[in-house]
Length: 199
View 1 (cartoon, helix red, strand yellow):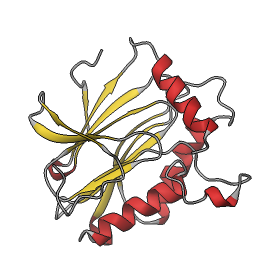
View 2 (cartoon, rainbow, N blue to C red):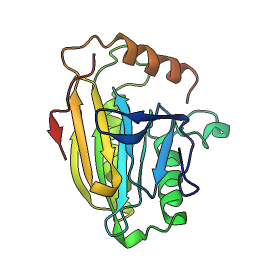
View 3 (tube, rainbow, N blue to C red):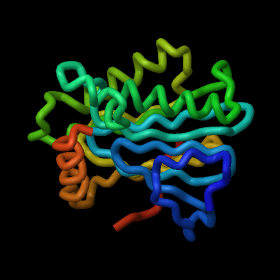
View 4 (cartoon, rainbow, N blue to C red):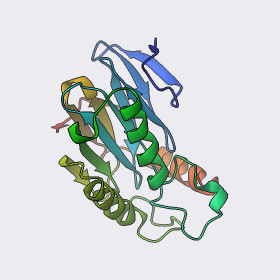
């Protein structure tokens, strides 16, 4: 169960029996931040996830966004976790509210694949990648590791208190679910194996 120190925008809480830990799965437009030992999981196609933590306290969280910014879209959509600017701001602000210090923040970033050939925004994976790198540079948050771009989806496992991210590249799986999920979220504007990469 979540504690009072967890921020619960993502409702998909469960117990992960493989890792023997409380876990939460986040979807596009969601984030989760916690001050206790937990696993945060997401699956990425062209979206990007930023795993950000305080290197001293271990307070950390992950977001999952679809587009860098609203730009030409309705400004009323600015406060949507689907957009990178808002997703990054709300996660970092929540971490600071929970006791993290700006000077202690560090990041690991993932996603941005060229999975959706028919995605309505050209080069969305590359645009997301460019955005998240520049945003973190401007905020002076060092990037400790990244796994970005390419053509396959990824499943991300983030253990904030351990400073560990595990990545499963889903190269042999059908991508229809991920494609459908991202297309559905785009319209609203807004088989698992053991992990094989550690960050």
